[in-house]
Each structure stands twice: as structure tokens, then as C-alpha cells.
Amino acid sequence: MSTKQKTTKASGSSTGLYKADSVKDVAESLGITNLPEAVASALASDVEYRVHQVIEEASRFMRHARRNTLTTSDIDRALRVLNIEPLYGHSAYTTAVFRRALPYPQLASAGPVYFVEDEEIDFERVLREEKLVLPPSVRWTAHWLAVEGVQPLIPENPPAVPRDDPSLTAPGTSASDKRASQQAALVKQVLSRELQLYYARLTTSILPSGSGTVDPTKRTAALASLRHDAGLQPLLPYLVRWVGEGTVNVLHNGTQDDASGRTLEVLLDVIAALLENTTLFIEPYLHQILPPVLSVLLHSSLPPMHSTHLRTSAASALARILTQYSATYPSLAPRIMKTLLLALLAPDRGPGTRLGALRGLIGVGKEAVRKGILDAGGAKALGAEPGVAGAVFEALAVLHPPSEHPVPLDLEDLDDAQIAERLREILGDFFADRLVSDANWARGVLEES
Image (cartoon, rainbow, N blue to C red; front, side, top):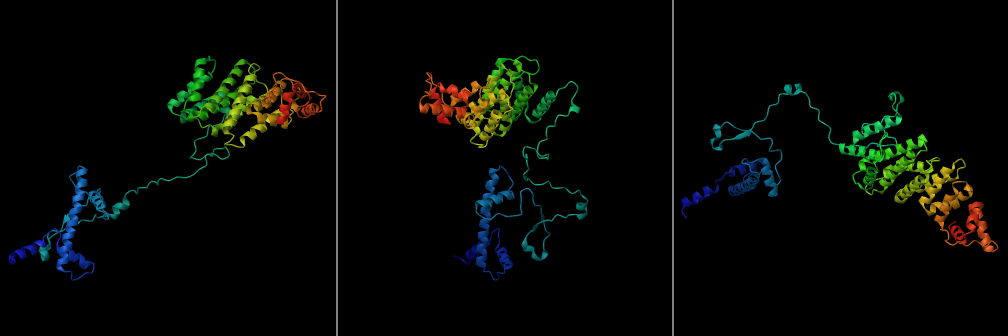
């Protein structure tokens, strides 16, 4: 190989975009002096190769984005792909403006130099401008929705429904009409238009307002909708309140006509339909459902033509509530039992209330009857009270069914005489004389005591 070719190859090895002098300058800034020429050339070639590699990867991102301009975000993505730490302080949204510096006569071989011009900030203008207040960041906080059943008046809670004010009631407007208008206003504020329309159609189909006629087909369809539809959860608090207010209005008026009895029957049917709907979450509203059920069950003067059916329906609803929610709320059954026993044994209660308490015990089940009739002495306390004795015999039949062909106890026999004596101690003379005529029934009742 000639000397001319060797010289050409040596000079060609130093040609490139990134010069060896740049590597030496960087080395001197790091405190490395007398860097060999061969090492500087090798490092310059490697740096140029790496730069080409990064630009090639970045251009792929540019082409996939269907752009013709390479941005700093493309460079960042390329560095991530090559497992290189990205550059910081550069963004695709803040394009840097480069200016060309004046040439240096002392160093003409350095070539053109470009720099980024810093922005000049006028402090007087900045101080005169209106200061922008940054909005608070997203945060969360806890607050009381209700404290012992009372909703605190704080901005986080919805506004409370205003109480009835007699001074604001227009002449000729009853308090019930005003409550209905307030409830309708509340429904209108919270519910969607579709649910508002459904609520209005549902309530008018079940109980027409004013002197409207009842359509049995519409009422049956409305109850079936309450029993099976899955989208009634937003309406549940308003339906429960509507049933409670309707029950209170009918019982408060004290009318014994047929219309009042039918209204109470329909309201109990609504409660039964809501309890049968498996898609509804009833538990938060049990404290609102139980009062109308117990009020109908234990009211002293129901319409005579409907009293038996009303107490039976209320007892059935009460039994369903206890069956579904006694496991979740262990104190629910004892509290209801205490209410029924108080209504049964209190001396100032009327026959209607006692009859309702017995119906409630029968509806709750065998254990409730045993505690109320036998353990608490309910049968002995009632005695031969008119209108209640039949319900006591039905309760005793729940403990043990009577025989189809009864055989009386033999009072001359010592064992049968002891059974009869024990029956008088537990049930009293009136009911013991009836059970003596059926030996099998008497022994079955005593076994449950």
C-alpha cells in the first residue's frame, strides 16, 4: 500500500459529523488530559453511531404518527426503546427557537454556532398583571349523613324537606294535600323524568286520588310491577313513605267504612309486593316499613268487614320480614316479640289489639306462640274474652294440631288428672276445659311448654 493511500485512510477515519476534538473537549471538562488521538477517534465514531441509531428509531415513531417533523417526544420514545435514560427538560409543546451566533474571526474552522435565546421577562409587567388563583386539587372528606336518624344541615347533605307550617297553608288546603305536594316536589327534584312519570302512574293506579274510580286491571299490573321489576331502587324510599303516610291517614281518621278497609288492604299488598321483590335492598327502610304493618296489626278498631283479612295480611308481612332479616339483625325478633307481648298482656288493651297480637304471634311462628301463650301466660290472662278465644285456639293448634277424632282425658286416671291440672295452671280453666276433651291435643300442647 502506498504512502498516499495510508494518508487518505487516516484522514478518512477522522471524517464524520462528530469530531474527535469534541471528544477531547468533553474529556478536558471532566478532568481527563492528554487523551490519545486513537481513543478520541474511536469514541467519536461510537457517539456518531449511537446518534444515528437514536434518530433512526425516532424516525419510525414519526412515520407511524404520520408526521413529517421529528419532535422531542419521538426522541424520548426512541431512548426508551433502546433502554437509555430519556432527556429531561424538553417537551414537544415548547419548541425551542435557535439563533445563529456571529462567526469568530479567531476560530474560523469552528463553523457556525447556534444557540437558544433566553426569554426576557419584564418584572413590572408581571407585577401589574392580575394574579390567577389556582383551583384546589381533587380531594375527599368525610361527613355525617345522619346522626341518630337526624340529618345535619351541612352543605354536603341534601336540603331538608320543610315541615308543615299552618300559617303557610292556603285556605281550603288540607295538611295531607300539602304533604303530598311536598313529596311530589321532592320526587321531582331527585328522580329522573321517567321515574317521576312511573311514580305518578303507579300511585294513581293503586290508589286513585280524589273520587277516581279503581281499575282492577291497572292495580294488578301495578302490584305485579312492584313485585318483579328490577329498576325500582331509586323509588323505594318514596314508595315506603307513601305507604306509611297513607296508613296513618286512614287510621287517624277512624272511619269504619268499606273504602278505608280496602285502602288498608291495598297498602299492605304494596308492602308485600316490595318484600317479594328480590332485586330491592329493603334493609335501610325496615324502620319505616314496620310501623304501618304493626299499626294495622295492633289497631283496636279496624273496619269490621276487613279486620280479619287485614290482621292476617299484616301478620304475614311481619313473618316475612322476620324470616328474611332476623339473621342480619339479631335484635329485630326480640323487639317485635316484646311489642306483641305488651299488646297481648297489657290490661288496658282492647279486644282488637289483643286479637292482632295473637295474629302476629301466629304469623311469626311456633316459637313465638309458645313464648306468648304458654311461657308468658297469655292464654290464662285472656280467659274467655269475647272475640279473642277463637284466635287462642288457633294459636294452640299451631303448637300441636287437634285430633280428627278426639278422645277425652280420663280424669279418674292419675296421669290424666295431672295433665288436666297442669293445663289449668298454664292455660286457665276456660281453655283447659276445652283441651281436656282431646287427650292427644292436650298432651301435645304440654310437650311444647
